[in-house]
Amino acid sequence: MGLREYRKKRNFEKTNEPKGAEKTSGGNIYVIQKHQARRLHYDLRLEMDGALKSWAIPKTPPQKEGIKRLAVQVEDHPVDYANFEGTIPEGQYGAGTVEIWDRGKYVLKEKEEDKLVFEIKGNKLKGDYCLVRFKERKNWLFFKKKMG
Ligand code: MN
Image (cartoon, rainbow, N blue to C red; front, side, top):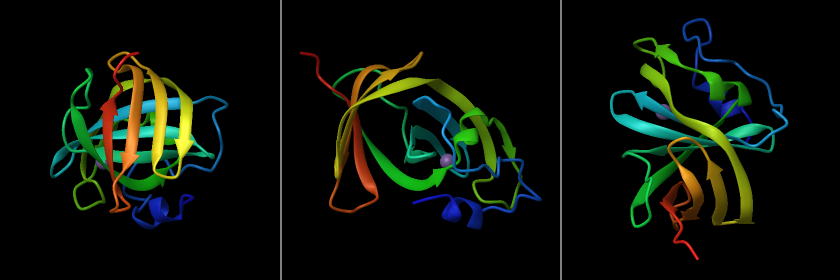
């Protein structure tokens, strides 16, 4: 996907979000940013292929098994975005406040075209999680895997 779409949507003279570069942090960043935009949502981001793969989750991410959340894939974000907190000004894409809700690392366990399984090592989310893609390409289900 790259960062083209990310940059196209933003005016970096007006927003203080990072312009970023494709690079890796040398790790497997996991972060969820609480984004109070027109609608509150949670942005799940996983470092992959030099960028942060990103999904917008309209409800609180599940800390327990048995809760499934819609996760809408959005444009890749730069790795530097993992540290971003602040206010995106009125009139700009995603206007509102961004704060880090959870962060840590993840360990990829399975990767298929339509399915990711990974262990999250965060403060709020811990354990094995799945992202499973629907037929509508941008829509995924995000849930905590059953143990055992
Ligand atoms: Mn967002």
